[in-house]
Image (cartoon, rainbow, N blue to C red):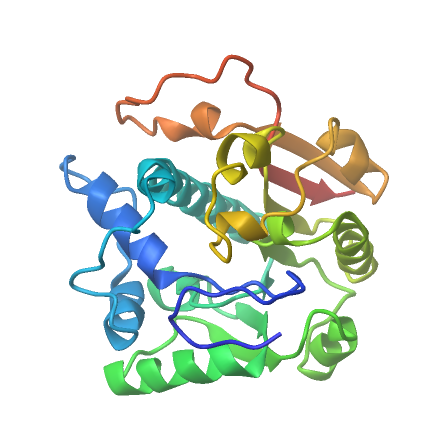
Length: 286
């Protein structure tokens, strides 16, 4: 489980999540421009992409299948980011003052979100992406809008112990985000992650997940080039994600991208033949 900064990469075992500035920046450029008011502004991500040689231009993938997927992937990245931003705001409004980003990668919420006073945000990832990120942030003289605490640990290791050592308090509510992570984890690793999150969550905690909708691997993975991001997708959400999370102590809601997509914008892609629950999960610890 190694990281190479802003390059598009995944680890062979699929347990380490590396955020992809290229995908994020492409999506925001492509989908925000046509509207007067963008869904979000994210200058730090442009800095990460520039440092990685992926901005101002990034070539199209060579294989046609990846080119066909690119608009859909960009669309989903924009919507999921907005969905999880809203979850953070709701958690803050409820009084939550500590958050954890699992597989934080190049996530820039510490720098672009207006956080309430006293908020602490823990970014959990391996050392390589966190070091790359730190170097870019120093160059940009970026200042976090909350207390930002990085936790360099492999998700296969005892990351709850490392998180506690960094100052996380499981006795008070936490907002958890796992964005773009679960689809790269085998089923047993997903269960272990959820169990560990639950064990560190006080009542009133919030959780936001992006989970591969049922059928997404079949739709997009069949013609994926070996070694590509899509070829490394290994798991989808269960048939009953709400029930699965209830078993871990969470009261959850499941939404498709289409349900959350509009935000006042037009949707040009046709619906799938069957819109199953999936994609975006919000949950509260009771």
